Length: 171
Image 1 (cartoon, one colour):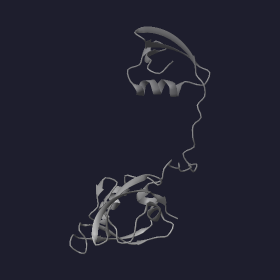
Image 2 (cartoon, helix red, strand yellow):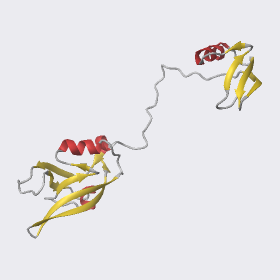
Image 3 (cartoon, rainbow, N blue to C red):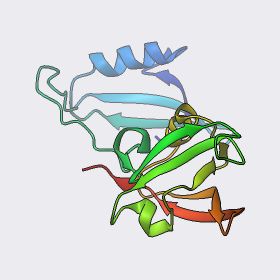
């Protein structure tokens, strides 16, 4: 029996549903010979199958929790900066998230983020509030690279700077 085969009969009895098929298989003892009629490639084929035994898991045994390949940034991510929400006009040319502090050796410092920067876009999401940042983080994983658009004050002028930051893992 192969994938995409259609089981039509077992031991001369029509199989009309998955439930019927499951009942026949469940009631068959290991070593029993079952005769199937299957439909494959537009042909009816007779196939004999000797039933094997099936290992049944004990539902009372503790199960190992599968480890995800990637950790969600919203739960385990680390950026390494303290942010505060600012409105346009509060010494800011645009509303966004002002960087109040950058932790030494953090992903933010590695990316070139500086204290006083205003993050206006984080991974294609306009960041007007911490909730906007949390929403963007919920779609990302530790290790992902994200683009930041920041506004930085230099020489009494504000300029837009694009940075790339890798999300670190919270310790």
